Amino acid sequence: MGPLATADFMRKLVQSTPAARDQDHMPVFVHSVPQIPDRSESFLAGSDAPWPFLLSGLRILEAAGAGAIAIPCNTAHLWHARLAAATDLEVLHIGSATSEAVTSHPARLTRVGLLATSATIQGRIYHDALCAAGVDVIVPPAQHQTERVMAGIAAVKAGDLAAATSLLRLAAAQLVDDGAQGVILGCTELPLALDGQSSDVPLFDTTHLLAAACIAWWSRSKAEQLRSESFSS
Amino acid sequence: MGPLATADFMRKLVQSTPAARDQDHMPVFVHSVPQIPDRSESFLAGSDAPWPFLLSGLRILEAAGAGAIAIPCNTAHLWHARLAAATDLEVLHIGSATSEAVTSHPARLTRVGLLATSATIQGRIYHDALCAAGVDVIVPPAQHQTERVMAGIAAVKAGDLAAATSLLRLAAAQLVDDGAQGVILGCTELPLALDGQSSDVPLFDTTHLLAAACIAWWSRSKAEQLRSESFSS
Image (cartoon, rainbow over all chains, first blue to last red; front, side):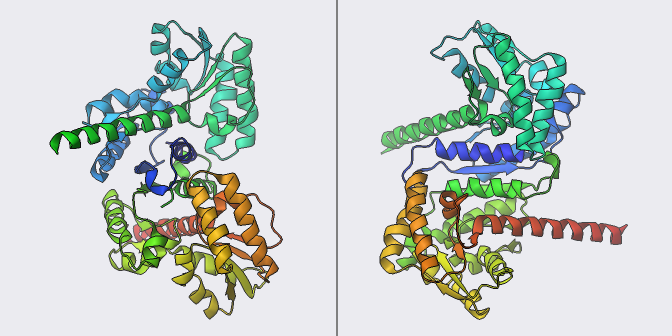
């Protein structure tokens, strides 16, 4: 939903695709309409204001011929179940893709830190799946959540990446001090500020992991098409 | 049409927009379907193969509610006049945006170099407007055009930016040696390889200039809407 995060998602989608020429890349339709009300503020205020915008975007992508839907915004996944129920298309889930990467990490992580919007935390987008898999999720204390994480996300949205990087590095370091063996960048604005930053623990880039899930979907979808063509011929 | 160039265009669009929050950004629909046949090969072979793909993309963007069309691919502008004739929407022109930037450059350039696909050169996307404005356009000799420019563009499309950068730096330097006072990066793959490279002469980034033209269109369009709302109230 953040337009810079959407551009970052597209770049990661292209750069994660094995391709030798344009035609090897996945066809993509993008509906980037940042006039949608803030997802985190709406959820915390008990407002459903983003929903009509999400549904309208879904219908436009369906009409354009999309075969699956990806939403490069973690907080918007608070509406994922309703979107998935409103369409026959597969709606990929950024939290599932990331939780799988966390639980299958070779270091067998038992405690991860979560940097995300306050709504993503309160809505338990990561907590439920990871707790069920035996992974503890820790989050910044309330004051850091406001002054570092939410302020850092707002700085990315305002185009001030330098300010965002210094705030978010502090927030990530505190989670590691508190025992996090890995940190989930659970908002797609975060990799924009933290890409290329060194870290003592693995950082889980949810933008990249959603892109990888798209490419996996596309491979499955091409394989199924080939199978059905070979049956019908 | 190159998907990495499309992602770069989106990033430049966002980063060129004065905005403090998501909602200040322009709504954008993207139709990135790289299965379209190669524009340069088709034009040079006298083939119209890209046309149905371009027209289908136009119709999908019209249906999604687009107010103007931008095509972040210089070579596809060989079909610009036909696209513009096929729609009521304004179809921005990357070559016009760039030619204006060249002719209004404070250094009063009289000779510029053009790095572009062979089709963009033969189709005179830049030559006609610039010659009419009294600016000479020089291009690489045929062997460099093939072995440096076209090979460099193909390297970007294959994701090998390091190889592309070294080939394209050589091509740009040769144009400067031949008297170019500025160099047009007349293919949207080129800024991906040359962004951030130092240069003795101004480099005209056509991706950035098309993004700027979009933002100017959007400002005009918002101003017109405000005017018409104040008349009708």
